Length: 361
View (cartoon, rainbow, N blue to C red):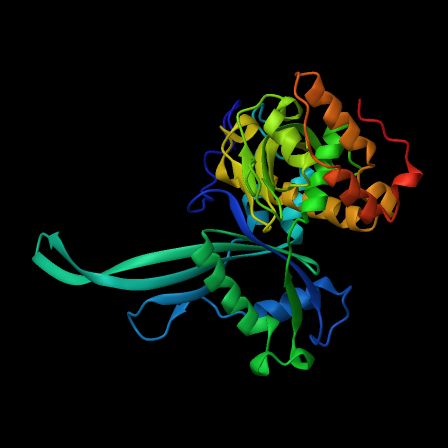
């Protein structure tokens, strides 16, 4: 076991690149000939169909999937260490994961190696990787650079997602990209504005950066990114952008999960970047990836919960626009916005101005 005060230095788990989940997907078994509740049968079938890591010919570049088996690393993990960031909850999460590393090797030219027996010329091997974390049957997360994620998902789709040229009737597993609706990101901001907690294991600590995107270009611009603010709700560009119905396509800030504070950048496209900051700055990569997977699971569950809410809870009330307007007035700025945000929120809530007594002083 590791010495007191340190988390198992013997754990050799690592990954290439940053902790970026560059692809999130909802999944559902289709024609696997197994019951959706039989997770082990689904796991076995996928494992059987995914191509293993091997070379097409002797000495050639390798391509395919190999086990990660995060659960096995807990045999070396000291939960009692004062620096331990994981709990039995994370061991349960690791046991649930279908986790694989996708490897794609390429010969990238000749290289010369000096040995005691002389010089030898051979081909240099470039190794590209992506990491698949599948919470069966419903959520698939891929960590890695975008080109590697695309290659990995192309192989997953070919093996288990689509068969016979994409005939939906012959699909084994339905795999659909998961995105974060701008109105969901707006709801996150509104919850922070109201200082309201979520009904999942995720807690928002603060918002430090927001990207805004509108349908029309004006003097404010079609898009904007507001950064470097300790209180995003005091930022006039942020307030102006929202009032002009430019909705968030990015939200970044600090979130807590299992008592650990993580700095997270969430993109509308489904990209989630967990930065080496706050509590995970000194964490091992083994700890980081499990905290990251847990956060993404909580975030996607929150997104699903939001999608199921009634309209009056799903979309902020038009009084939100009044409050933003008044916050701008406190900074001696009168914003001309033609009630764009009000009209948009009312349309989403299936309400009219007659339902509200709104006063912009």
